[in-house]
Length: 279
Image 1 (spheres, helix red, strand yellow):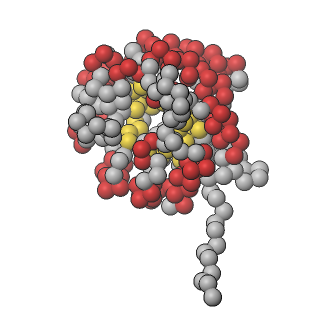
Image 2: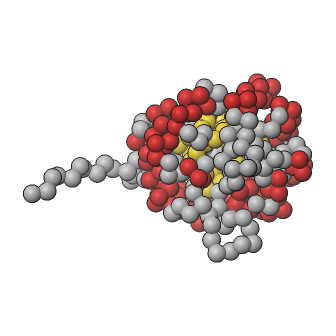
Image 3: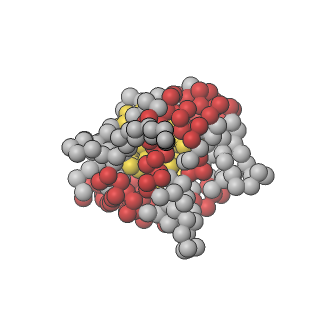
C-alpha cells in the first residue's frame, strides 16, 4: 500500500480566469504592471561613490525612476571583480539619498537576504540564481519586492516555478525579467526572447520587464531591443548605464553612456505612446 501523495496546490504564478494584473509597488512612486512603463538604469556594478552617484543623476535626468547596481557580483571567473559588497550597499544608499531613486540590487546568498533587504528597495535574483531554491524561499519570507531574472537556459515553465517558490512563501511582490537565453546563435551575447514576454502577459498576472543589455552584450543593439520590448508589452526596462563605460569593471561593452541612455528613453517613449502607454 502506497502512502497518499500530498495534494498539489493551485499554481500561484499562473493567471486564473478573470484575474487582473498584479501591481508591484516599490518605494513611494514606482509601480510595475500599471500603464506607465518602469525605466531602471544604472551600472552593472557599484565601483565608487562618485561612479554610482553620477550615473544615478544621469539616468534620473533621462527619465529613469529606479537605480540598479550590483554590490555583490556573480562572475564566471573567480578572478574577475566580485563587487564591493557591504561597502557597495552603503554607496547605493547614498546615491538614493541624493537622487531619490529607489534601488534594486542582487542578493546571492540566503544568509545575506536580511542584510541586503535593510538597504535595497527591491531584491534581484540573477539568472544564475533562478533555481537557488533556498534563496527563493528566503526572499519570499522577507516580503521585499523581488525582481526575478530568467536563467539563460530556463524554460518559461521553470521560470514560473521559480516565481512560485517566492509566492508560496507569502510574497506576492514578484516582477519577472526576461534577459535573453542561450541559443545556437553567437551574434549576440544572448537571444532576447520577445515571444516570452507576449506569452507571459497572457498566462501570468505578474509584471514582466526586459533587460536588453544582457541580451545584447553590445551597446550598439540595446536601444533597438528596448524598443522591441516596449512594443511587445513589457512593463519595464532594466538598462545598464555607466557615466564612463570604457572604465567599467564589468559589462563595459553593453553599458550605455548618459547620452545613449537619453536616446533610449526618447525612442522607447515614442513606442510607448504608439501603443497607449507612457514611459
